Length: 64
Image (tube, rainbow, N blue to C red):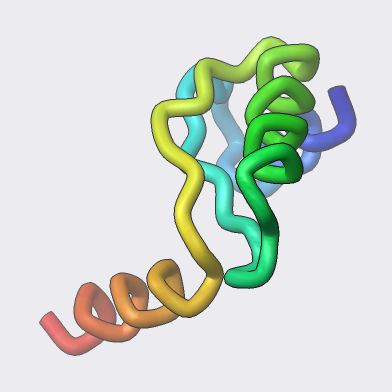
């Protein structure tokens, strides 16, 4: 629940869907556990992406 509360406090609105980042070295089991944690927090986890990938996406979006 803390994950959802932090996101809602930061964004100032309700959060139902999420894209979650994980370290690049996480294996399949760790990624699945992260997805389950999101579900327990009442989030619809749309995608799990590596942190380096997330950083690259953020960089490109910032440059637009």
